[in-house]
Length: 392
Image 1 (spheres, rainbow, N blue to C red):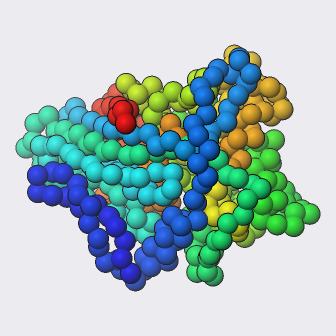
Image 2 (image 1 turned 90 degrees about the vertical axis):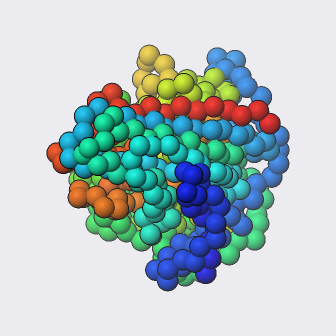
């Protein structure tokens, strides 16, 4: 079994390679092949930009690729023993994203690594205690486009038992038994297909959870604790992980997709875009479900709750509100291509880290003799992320 990947040239440039995968990763490789084959989308042309106040329009459509260069810069303010930094590298290649070349510069020792299970790529840099002003800069180029599933059309999709088992399996942060399963079973009662189950769970998330702006970063994704405590407020890694866990618990293959907003929304929604000159805090987790006859389908109920809570000064409580309704409709089956994906990895072990595994790799991570650096405090663990759109 072989899969295309990235490796470092001695000059610090990442080049495309073909590597043989270990037996333990064969299910993942089969899944990537299935995903690439199954998510072919019709070319319907690029939606025209508009503002929410002018027709409340939000209608992403595939058809035009956009090219971006994304740069992450980390500067370690004070060395404390050996310091290690891990930076996520875009490693998703599908019909909606192409992860291309990357390059880096650093005064530390750098190497590429991955998490061995999901294929999440990262740049690992180690700085000796003697290095003054440790720094690393990583630049990656990607192509991305909008997604919009055509629910009226069906295409040939293939999957096997191992693939389904892989994407319905529980992880440490995504349990699929107990209160998670009971909540999902209650939500989907009467549903006769995976599409109906997915719609019921999507609607349940929007009706029962809410965006909580005070949560740090993107949240932790501890879905069992959320349900047990009844505290259903959170951010994307909480709400979309709950959606994924509930889907898995009733047999619908699902996964989180961890990434970064790059530029403003073409539809004028300020909360659904990023400021390319400063993308600290622009990390965003989305979701996908596998549906027979459709393949991997985009989902993002967490962004619906974000628009409801933060798009206006008033907290909108109904998804049928004219501002929310087009977003609610479009994000069941689509998303806008002003965002890039890093990976789909859960419960990630950082190579050579002395700390515990992390729920996901979406932020720069760092560690020194005093312990792990706080990725949610980019002004003390100093990093900056910027994006540049490249004209065709």
